Image (cartoon, rainbow, N blue to C red; front, side, top):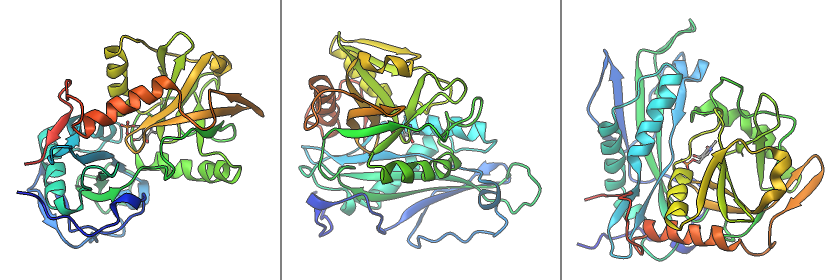
Length: 342
Ligand SMILES: Cc1ncc(COP(=O)(O)O)c(C=O)c1O
């Protein structure tokens, strides 16, 4: 049966928050996870001394659901996010839900908001935000023994309203997003709080995104503020940095597979910032935009340019189309990435 959709301006959805029907919650106490509950009220009753408020024991995920060409509702690789939040939780000494509970909660949050999943044909999707918080009231600096895991959703359009167009970026030289042996490889909420000021400063200078270097030597490319770095060399190798302080992007992992499928060589290695000119194309990849083509990277006052200002390069365009084609059910899901919501 066709789902009746909300009367929204699907074509012009931005990335702005508004409430949907409900979210889902699961609580961890007495050493175990409870039942998944659907909640209409978007507010959480929380103690003022909860660990997450005072000491920042919090992490999250970002996932997308789509309506396919055939009218199915599908979620992109939610089990990978389930595994990643477990790694974040492990580093932060938190308990995360088992993979099955995570995926079930994500599916239920989508199911409860099916009328908000954008219909096929608008380039839009349902953004899914799972969050894990330490909830125990505490003043001593110890890990919480109680946790809340919740999942809310919001329909979104393309991250950049003008679409798949190249952006100018800059190497952030005065701030780090991660520390050596810190939490850069996790999706800890505090990492993003630390990135807000440098983000504002680079926007004020006219750049769209900031590129961070490795926090130890400041010699190698780490990642953009909320996306991994990918570079296509002049001989068509897909290159992405190997670093212990970057978030293992599920989009990057998937793009690497697609690049391999296309016969490209895929290399994951340390990339010196001084080698940036070896790339014919540069992109930032992540759930929100899939790929943001990068027109330039400014480093120490010099602007390094990749291709055309008004159009993404051919390889990134091909990868982007293939990726979105799979998400929207236009291309065979040969890697079994899409989970159907019944
Ligand atoms: C720091 C950082 N790197 C990379 C990514 C891209 O990861 P993914 O492709 O899993 O969304 C994100 C977004 O989630 C991020 O916040």
